[in-house]
Length: 497
Ligand SMILES: *Cc1c(COP(=O)(O)O)cnc(C)c1O
Image 1 (tube, rainbow, N blue to C red):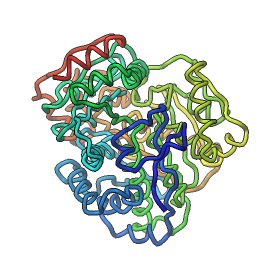
Image 2 (cartoon, rainbow, N blue to C red):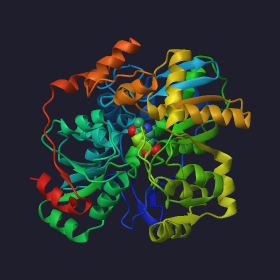
Image 3 (cartoon, rainbow, N blue to C red):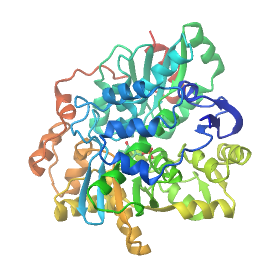
């Protein structure tokens, strides 16, 4: 069996893992996706129980990366998940709130958000993929970020050989800490620029740059080619499978579950990359009950999963969980491909309808399959604040607004469905990354300005702020430029030397 990658819009496109990672997006605009999935057995999970997180990552990733050696992958995980980068040696620890409820903390990396889990590995995969494919050019990574990806990508790629990284973030869509994290980025191969508008403006702008043939040619002349670090790159999804499997192994190891017992996962969702990784793990044999897709007021996915109609023609809300302020969830395309029996023509058609009219409806049979795997819900700003306050008051456990959305949707799902499976809810950011909204939610009236709010939250909670956030105060601001969406192409040339 050979592990090839096909486009979700054309199955005849077939690439190796390293080609798929180097290329990012298929030429036809589809997403590169494994043609077959490996099957995991109870023995596989049992074997991982006694292993470290890095060893678990190698065991899972090597199944998908035939043209990488185990030795290479070991090197990558040792570098990416080292004690220098992660402040917890378990990398993705589980915290029990009670016997049935566990929080999977994915924010112990260098930028305090879950994007580090993949972006500490992707640059290594990409750099090696270039060498494996005799690529002479320098890769120019273009990123549209709703906040967390940008910083995690900058940190992951900084000063990696033969890479440049340019990040566009929405001026009106990131927190003060997030903006400062990017504006102060160090490294000789990095560029950062704000775009007037919201995340969809920045993402659409980057997609236009990717499909601009003239720009592609001009860059090639200068020795560059474009690739992506957004979650459309398979190298972003793959490392994310690991923590779902790892959490299951931890529950087994702690005697909380028996082998084969189903566990639900509730994931705060934006671009659908994180929860998609869990769906792949389930397809491969991880005993997952329901995948609970949690959204904020931008509830396009809730409606889709409940009705089968995806409709982005709706008001865009700027919320306190900005990494989920998304109306077009790119990775849903991979789910449609997988659950439709790899019907590339149908997927291409849905995506064309989405482009033309902003909506599409999947057939009844496909909707039923989606509902067999997924439940969905959303919550508003007041619910989000209330969850932060409740979890702190009742459990003395501090969660950020994204995690609070997941917590709320999980609790509602349990009440409405009566589902008694143990549930892991995913925590995607440190509360310190969003301290002003966390402090307000906790009922503090006078929230201090900017980084002083970090100290305030640390004092109030008795927990220390993550070291890289505390260090922001002493960093020089390097990037202050902001442009209109139409001027992003010029900004590329300004940022590239
Ligand atoms: C990116 C992000 C999400 C959404 O993840 P997707 O993979 O885009 O669904 C949720 N929370 C935080 C903190 C994030 O950074």
